[in-house]
Length: 468
Image 1 (cartoon, helix red, strand yellow):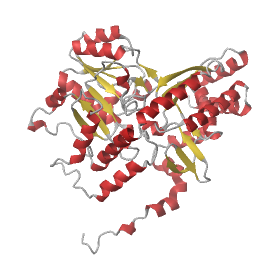
Image 2 (cartoon, one colour; image 1 turned 90 degrees about the vertical axis):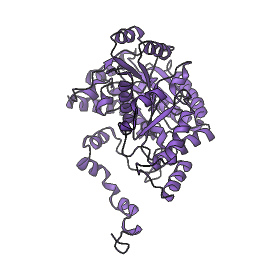
Image 3 (cartoon, one colour; image 1 turned 135 degrees about the vertical axis):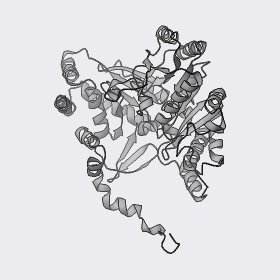
Image 4 (cartoon, one colour; image 1 turned 120 degrees about the vertical axis):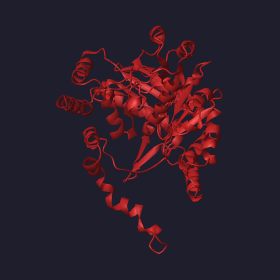
């Protein structure tokens, strides 16, 4: 193509395209993508038209603001469109770097690896991929190759990704069903050292992969478990793999969640989500020097594990900007302080509401669990929901939080009566006040027999029965 015939910058107008077609968003999804997504959103009343976003908020076309307590499943650790990350991406695009040549060593990947490793001084090297599940796949491959053993242990209810290798260590049958055969991995209960040791004695275990706090249900590993598991694993020449894809980069009030327990030094650590700054997909697997040197043991094996878009300049620039913001704006300390305030204020409501069972978690990763009430009237309604499908009451709470109070939350997993709060790590006291006040209002409604809320519950029951 010559200079005379090449495309000009004005030939593609994104703003014009969105202005003309944005209203078709749900129809386009139904026609060309996962057709169940718009159907589900219509059913629960989540079919909103968000026009813009900044920080911890969205806005619709009418200018109404919505507090985001979901953070894109944890991707938006710094909120949306942080100015430092935006500038870094503008700068890297304007630099016109010779990116992804594959036969040179650009500086940005080395610089980001250097910065990441300062937070895990016992680790030495980094592999960059494009997602959390890819970071997990890397860890699984490296653990198997480095130890020469085939089996990786995981915990029930764990979520480590949905690609085939990661699915093999996914503790939820709903994700696994229909995709067999998977890798020959084995579930061991979180916190059960006896079962772990029994499996290790078989001599074929490469490692244990564990979320220090499980995303599904927000369950913490018991105190002392990670250190004891690490000792057992090393005694049997197996590795500890920490999946910090959601819990890492400040989410739990420490840079990594495993750092909450003294003496825990995982052999491999998986990160992603918040490292992206919410812009460019990126995943990273951090590991010990000897593991990397065993995988990449010769020049013949230089590309034995790689990713086409791994370590691209845009992702590396975003990651470097994220780490800079986290340090300069004391993001980890804010997550710890706001998390403690939010959790304590919610926990204080447990004695007030019989439908509220427990509030748990750490930092800004909080689970709100609902349970069977004592009073006869509420118990009969609870039983009706449970008979149709477990998890419907939590959905009944999520919906009015959005519809009435413009707060976006999520049910923590299928068939769970748990709401998970994973807001941007930048939220402040005003946002905590808004959520607690809204949650209190919804719980008042539920316990007072509010018609609209329980009427919606009947709608969910009908939908659940129809889907059987």
